[in-house]
Image (tube, rainbow, N blue to C red; front, side, top):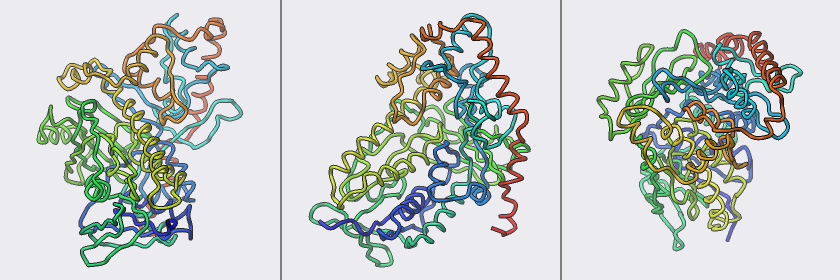
Length: 503
């Protein structure tokens, strides 16, 4: 069987253009790549918050960070602030980066737990430089705090997903990707069930060796043409609706995403330079679309500039994301609600996994099997992390009570039980969310371990006090001298030039 020479991508948006740009960059002249985008199908366009791994994706493409943020009206993100997820009025952060500094093989939080059990002490986030900077609206991309062993700020971005797709489109076309604007009418398969051609409404026939389905939740290739089924997670993740609306920019631009628990879901606030992305994720079982829209509109901080956009979704994943000579990426492959900003990251890891397992020929079952196994594991680990936010709560509404009483996946039950008993977290090396991420949500949602690691007992109380004090002193002094988030954006990343047509 001949080697793959031509790849056809169905669908644009973030998924399609991220895929096209990276494949064109990596494979250069080895592949012919065609992307087909329908002018009649709008993209969802609400994936505006990211996690730090997006830096690696942009770096491989060679995108300058400051130019990228100007072009996408982007801002920096130091983490997510969760409000009202425990008791009403509670707030905690999932801050990126390290918290404190471990000693030897013992993670930092065991020393914090020891101190916390013996006396009233500072919160876990008093030892996170990201949380301290976020609370003071400060930012600077130094990787290290001076000559100390403590890391500087770890960050991701907020940006306009539509503008990001446009930027990547320009990049991909410059790299030789063929762009077709057209609507697919039908798919033709060969005798082995492989996709042979795509038939467009203008009677064009597009041939390819391998096809990538970025057609969104309609899944035109992986489901409609090849019949691969979808596995729902809705028995754990009850939210199945979202409303998105854009508003005028905030007076001050915080370097973090806000996630605010509501009666039947949660509300997001994502600050960009030129506007704010807002939305409400909710369960249609507990709230009507009209009620949800009114709740969202009543809680906005600035004036709306777009009409509310209603979105339906089913949390879950494609049973086989790679089947025959077709790979699904983006919404066609599955969807995990945007609570931890993983949508664009899952696109990124799908592309990277495909490149690593790039098949010798179109119908390579062994490559597909390895890909699907890795993708399943990734989805389930992220799924568990998102379920954790809902399952551990003390709220009184029917939605939240059902969340707190549902039967959890065994993998999640075991992880929570281990932490409650010992303060230990068992995280596999290939998991997206680190021990520090799980720690913040568990502590933030009110779980306090019964004990801490025995090695933490080796340090005396006076030594522990000095150790903890040194960390907070260094971090707080460092943050004090940083510019504000707005100052840094204005100096290096302001989108005002874009509005004048200079970029």
